[in-house]
Image (cartoon, rainbow, N blue to C red; front, side, top):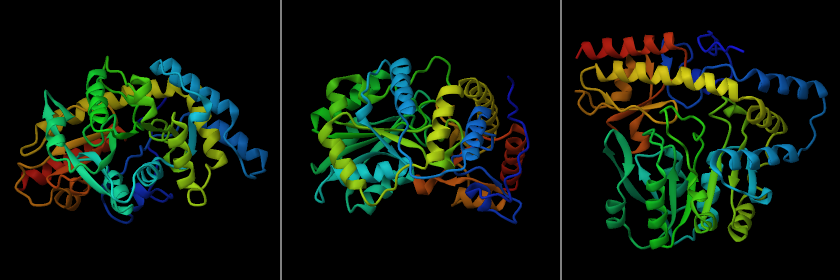
Length: 380
């Protein structure tokens, strides 16, 4: 089966948050992390069949989905997990917030790479916890955590190490030895770990493999909450299907207690979509990765040819992290927005001279956006 990622799908008059932000404006939205691609046919068919059933009462995680996910972890990562380790959630961001609130006390803090996906910072702030920055440094074309600098900046009150792999916004897929160093850091300071691995299936760099940090050892398991989801991979983010993998019974109990009465159960249609995606979506995913890889390479070449802009080739995700610090403008996001390109503001990630660009779109639209960016820079 062939899949058409160049298909024009008009989302301007739909319920799309991404496109609705600029309703009525001539602005190309390349900000929030969902793609403009039609979801896998198998997912659409499974949803249609479930809707045709016509009864939408309360649901529970299907045993078939649980077994499929357990098998997926074993096949992809040689990680043997148990069904009772899984806590299904209606989104990954609530998992970040629950982990901070459940696993840290009021006088304890968190650590997180900076710059970082904004909900990492917000989860600490909303819980009234401090957050120590672990600086990211550009090394051999990859954004990696500077553990020595992080260690020097610690207050001693930190309890939770918050990781993101593949890294958002930098696009780095951490190698096993890098994860081992992060685990050793956590062991040295007696830290628990929350690892956001939502982009783990979106690997663009040939030969690069994803490794869950919890899969490194039994000690890594006992101190970890791993967050995954099919939402970014198969463009079903609006359905809200995520999972927390929590091997340690005590941590899991605290996590579940924190969610009770506050975070709702997962929508029954989200379970249907997740299972169809994981069971039948691989051919579509393979084709999408080929398309995204070509978009990435095309984008990188064009951005690096623009005066004042630099980007590195992301290893995972469909999000480009663009350094605009050499551009003679104070607010790069606002500058490009005025030119008709809606990007994510690096200030929200902790880096105001950067912007993040979502290249999960058809190539013609991407080129149109890049043309506008180049033309805007030419006026400076």
